[in-house]
Image 1 (tube, rainbow, N blue to C red):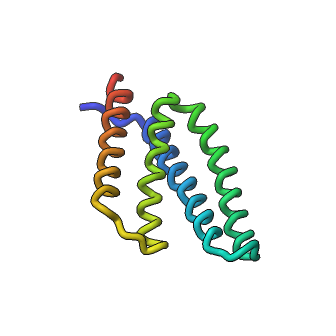
Image 2: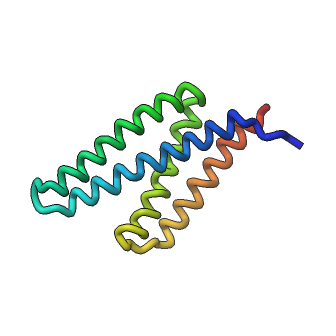
Amino acid sequence: MKLINRERVKDFLLMQISALVISFSNVFSKLAAFEDGITMKFLMFYGLSLFIMMLYAVLWQQILKRVSMTIAYSNRLVSIVWGVVWGCLIFHEKISLFNILGTIIIFIGLYVLIGGEYGEE
């Protein structure tokens, strides 16, 4: 039985947190798009979106120090899943069968990739 490598768990959690963070940038961008013209709410949402992108850039650099580029880029796809979740919860969008199928494909791909990369030890 393999023991779980704590550093790998930390790396994985950092990648998932970064995907969650960048997904909020998209939420605030969409909220800004609902505004008519350049209003205070537009500037607030747009500013929050930019701030989150800067925070994500810092997280991304930390991730690239710790994991291979292949693993890091593949985990960015999780932000798409968060986008579907936020679309449903915040914007009351419908989740289609294709959304669910796409989410399953993303997670299968991550499992295959991460299982192959981390399972070699």
